[in-house]
Each structure stands twice: as structure tokens, then as C-alpha cells.
Image 1 (tube, rainbow, N blue to C red):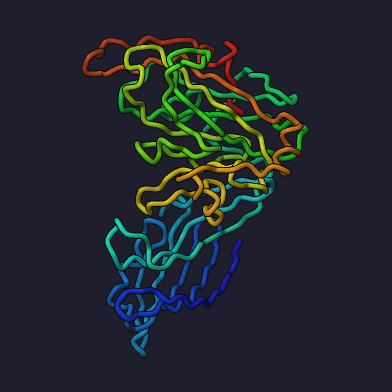
Image 2: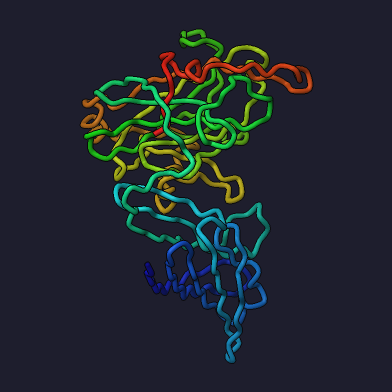
Length: 349
């Protein structure tokens, strides 16, 4: 499959007296992308400051006129490409940038890259294996939440988590005959109890209607989706509740995959670019800007969907955070079913 896109955009950038005249050609291949970015002669000495995501140019060609062509040829598994699966389509996102300054400053120029493909028949995320179990939610939907093992191949066989290690927390909703849905984590907190009380001490993880707060102050990220109705949160374990039982409380929401907005989103903070990114469509990341203030509801649209009660409060735990230097011998195994709020066997589908 090959898709060509030619774009010519002129953007004035404040650095020296140079102007970025973005003549960009994008060729989407089967598992990769080829990009040619033609630049003026005054920018050729700065060719190493052009990037596709995290990748530098594959090649620089200099024309007889002194102008240049910056070439990028990379697989979708490289350069921090993001993948979105929605309905029958699989979309890969990234961004072309020109960064004449150091990493602490934003890019002087940015241009979105998008490659869209038809989802192959019978395709599913290859590393998750089926199991068994459910967590009944409201609106006749079935929600799941569990702690995965480090290889993301199934439920973790232990509830002991080493301090500072990454915890992959998986959540999903079974669509069955329902219209296509996207699974969102609207709010998540860590607490010392399986039931939240008004005076419960909590550690906020996700808040402000889908903003991954921990990505701003610590190490946390939403992994690229393998399907729209599931989500994996990677979060580094902290000292909250160290040595005690810890429970993760999350408000899960099933939503329209074509209608992301300030109140229905999955946003995480990218420290390299110093901005909030929308997991499912980086080109719409502007809706994440409210994560720095207060994200408001879209009343009419939300009321229509909320009447169908497409949400569920789920609890994961108990988990035990231990300092391996103090508890090297502590590594008890537990039944994976204990990682589910309703104490039933777990399913990865």
C-alpha cells in the first residue's frame, strides 16, 4: 500500500533571518514512511536540527542551486511513532520538526505526519493471550482492569511491585454488539483502602477528565493502543503506601471514538516537547491544553451519552510496594484473580 501526499506550507520562524518554506512529500509504505523535506540553502548547514519524531534525517541531498533535501526513511516501530486503531482503520502519527535551539525550548516549526491503513481482517494485538473472567459494568457493558506482567503477555502472577519499577495497568471494555467504543480512564487514584471514603488519603494519578497527572511530575505514559476499546497505562511505582496494601481506583468510561473533547480524552505530558499530547490523535492535542487548568464538560454531547451510563468504577488490588533493598526475600505469588475488584478469573481479549 502506498499513499503519496505533497504539501507546500510557508511559515515564518523567528531565528536569525531564515524562513522555513516547508515543501514536504510523504510516501506511506507498508510498514514504513519515506519523507522528503526540501529546504532553502540557508538551512542546509542546520540539517541536523530537522527531526521526524526522535529520529534525525536518514540522508541529506544538496542540489546544484545550494538548496537541500532532507530525507527520512523509517519503520513505524522507530522514531516514537504513535498508533491509533479506530474501527476498520489503523493510523500512524508523528511530527516533523525543526529545532534550531536546545531541547528545553519548543520546536521552531512543526508539521504533522499521518499514515492511514485498512485494518487487516482478524488482526488483533499479537502479544496479549486470552484468559477468563469479567467485571460487569453499567449499561450492560463488561469492563476489565488488571496488572500485567512485565512482558505484557497476561496478568501478573504477583501483587508485589518493587519500588521504582514500571507497573503496566490494563483496562478494557467489551464492545460485543455495541457501536464502536473507545476506553478512557477519566480518573485514577491510589489509596490504602479498597473503598474510598471522604477522609481517605489518596495519591492522584489521572484527573481533570483524562489528564495523566503523573506524567507531569513523574514517569508515566499511555502506551499506543492495540484496539480502541482497551488502554494500557505505564506508571512508575512510588513510595505511597510503601510496604502496605495499595489499591488503584479508576473511573473507566466508554465513549465515541470519533468525538474526543476536553472532558473525554486520554492526555499525557511529553517532557521533551514540554506539552500535553492526545494519545489517540496528536493532531488534536490542543484539547489537552486544559490539563494545565480546568477541563470543562461538553454539556449537550455528554448528556446524550451519559444517559446510556457508559462508565464503571473499578478497583485494582491489593498491590504491595516494596523496597527491594529492604525486602529482597519478599516475592509471594498470588492468584491473578485477586487483582480484580470482583475476585473472578481475569481475561485478556
